[in-house]
Amino acid sequence: MTKESNRPPFESDLTADVVIIGSGATGLPAAIAAADAGASVLVVETNYDVGGHAILSGGNVPLGGGTSAQKKYGIEDSPDVVFADLTDWSVTQINGSPDYRYSDRAVIRAFADHCAATYEFLLANGVK
Image 1 (cartoon, rainbow, N blue to C red):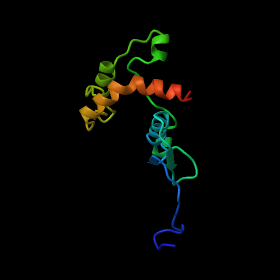
Image 2: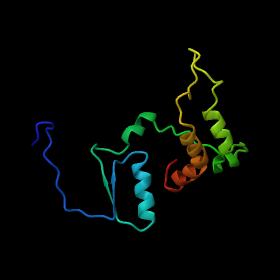
Image 3: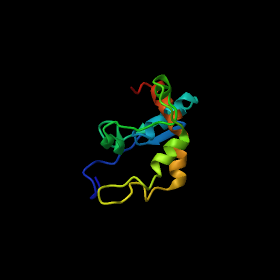
């Protein structure tokens, strides 16, 4: 055992085409996509359960931009509307500070552009 940890060192002879470190909100979809593409996949998780840091969100994932659910209920949305919503400095907290003042606009643009596809991916893989 190491001085830094009470756990013994981990050793394995497992092999896979793709090794995913972490079974959180990005690890599991990456594992699914790799498996769907025909790769053998190994997911390594340090915790006793899946969820990663995204588990703190309580499962709330705000995805829009024109999802099938939005279309079903007549809700008009688009990637441009999502982007505008997440970069609108006129929406402020009680202290007058805008929520999104530190957001990287390129990251928010990529998020907005992929919201609907992410929603459909999650839906197709059993997320309710």
